[in-house]
Image (cartoon, rainbow, N blue to C red; front, side, top):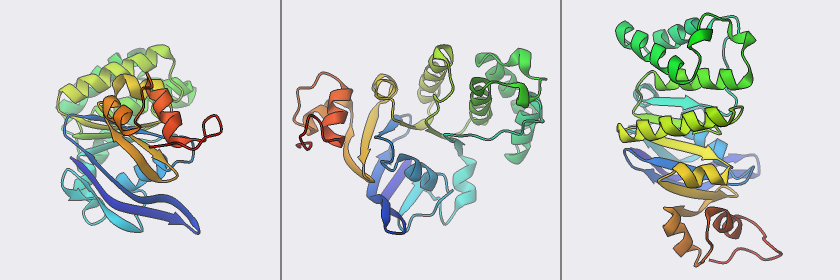
Length: 248
């Protein structure tokens, strides 16, 4: 469903993403895990068409995001790390606006918008202006706007930011539901426990490159490690841990 082949992105002398390749299958939750500055957000921005790779190709559902961005984005929903909402609109007006941008059938919009507002606990606030919302409420609204479109691919960059424990649980349950319904999900995070709990496969990125990818068991074998959890594997692969370079 998603193919990234030999992608590189530079900012001057800084190589933010270095010859990165990934493949994400249909009905899969795929985690991008890495320390701050590892290149996760740059990779995400290239995947959704906000940045062009200096070299390499990215395909979403078979569509090249650079050469055929309209068709790629029709099947794609993206929630950025710091999303923007129109704060003088009400929640319902905002969802109506997004529906118009993507030309969603009116009946489908009415059904899905109401459903996701209910799921994320925003129904009673749907006629309130977004400027009065907390950070967590705004994040729930952004997630509702993405999911109501029934996208084939969902890409989330640090989606748990601003969410309280209940919101995190709601999001986890929703991601499982979407995956089981055939949606492909890419989740960028630096929260190891979340990646370990919900991702079917994980790519660990460090200094712009994939240092390992696969299931938790694949990563354990790749690291030649008996570590009991993903945190130990992550530290082994991405950092100078206890004075030693990671060994593979």
